[in-house]
Image (cartoon, rainbow, N blue to C red):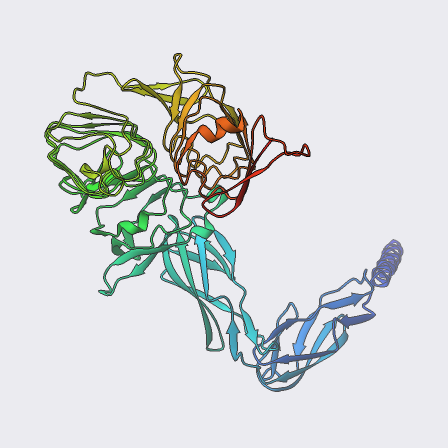
Amino acid sequence: MRKKLLITFLTLVCVITCTFALAACVRVRDDTVHVTDVTLSTDNLDIEVGEEVTLTATVFPDNATNKTVVWTVDDESIATVDNNGKVTALSEGTAIVRATADNTFHECRVFVRAKTLVEHISMDTSVTLLKNGETTLTATVHPENAKSPIVWAVEPEGIVSVDGGKLTALAQGEAIVTASADDVTAQCNVTVTYDGLKYVLNDDGQSYSVMQNYSGMFTGENELTEITVASEYNEKPVTAIGRWAFGQGIDCLKRLVIPASITDIDTNSLIYCDALTSIEVDKDNTQYASVDGILYNKAVTESVFVPYGITGVVEIPEAMTKISDYMFQNRKNLTGVKMHDGVTAIGKYAFSNCLGINSFTVTKNITEIESDAFHGCYKLWEIYNLSGLEIEKGGDIYTAPYGGIGLYALLVMTSATLPGGMHKTDEGFTFYTASGKTYLVDYTGTESQITLPEKFERHSYIINTFAFFDNNNITSISIPEGAVIEIRREAFSNCSNLKKLTLSTGLQNIGMTAFGFCGIDDIIFNGTLEQWNAIEKNEYWDRYMYSYNVVCTDGKLDEDGNVITEYYYNATKNRCVIFV
């Protein structure tokens, strides 16, 4: 009996346990959230062979228990689809792509058409980059509906890198960047320049020359003040500097370094470099050398080029026995040269237009000064002649002996121990005393309205030839009573902004073209008409003055009390009027 009761009890327990377990199972199944809908980003896809497009599937509801999407396609010969919905077109035709989630699906009809081939690619054909420069090339395919991707390449490597059309300069040189699609290509010639120079392959195909420059690119913070010419370009030697290498545009260049590889330099390439102060040559160069910033031949017996910006006094190298033809021509900041006794000759136009030279020493062994060696040196006021040449001051402008060295001189001395006659004032006036006369020879001040000194060391003075020549800062000049006895020819010539001039009695002479090309409206003369007429004037004293008035302190009246006006005509046939 007990046994039956035990069995019955155990059976009841099992039934109850199973009932509870079954109930629990029923509750779990009821918690599942099933997918009710699947949508795709498009129901129809129109693509061409080779194209790839990714479809996006959205599963509803958002809290569905199983949102896993399974992708399938009905014809894999036309298109394929991966687990992320990326459809790849393989051949012409129509295929159905299905996205399934929890037995719910959505389909997209895929129409695959023939590929539209690229027929043409357009982009820039040339680009120039500075050091570390960057730019982006835009390659446009034609027709517009062609969708093949652009493939970029560069040859040779190392000059510029390309990434999706973005170019980055790596090293100086030239490279070709190619954009390709469907066997169609477009090319861009890329130049990377560090020194602003354009290198051109020579006819031998084995070397380069510097022929031009990219000066327009180098402004502001990129301004070229120093250039080191490359010894190699595209792995070939650079052997020459051509005529236009440093042409107009590189006027800020101050220092130039020439490598050993250069064997030929056209010096015309440097004529626009007004700021250039120093040229340096590699010591291993076989054709050229440099001393104190000046370019010479290798033996330093002849000059090749003196920088236009050179200043101060230049010492002539020991190997030179002749100052080369044109050596210092137009070097306006040169103030002098120091010659050794081995120099025997000065070449033609050697110092022509050197306006900074006021004093020059002709050393003892000089036997020849060639034609026009000192042409235009109108500020060369004193000469120390230690040679056997018979140098005299003055002379005819066209036939002046010894290269015109004495043409504008006020003093020629034959001993280096004699003191010069030059004196400079704090106001910027330079006076020169020679042979008992005093000359005002130069003005370097900055004032625009000038009153000249009353005297110099208690002496009246002569305003020398070209004393104020080409000074465009001056607007008016006043000469005190008795200060000036003579105004020499072209003393104020080319002072284009000089409008008013005040002269005083004591003036005895006015030289030829003394005020030529000035803008003078009024000459105020602090004296009578008689005194004005008494001044000895060169026939062409007012040449190139155009129209002006001379105002005196008195005049004559006619019987009606009106001022009598006298008319004069200057060399340009413009009327000048003298009146009260």
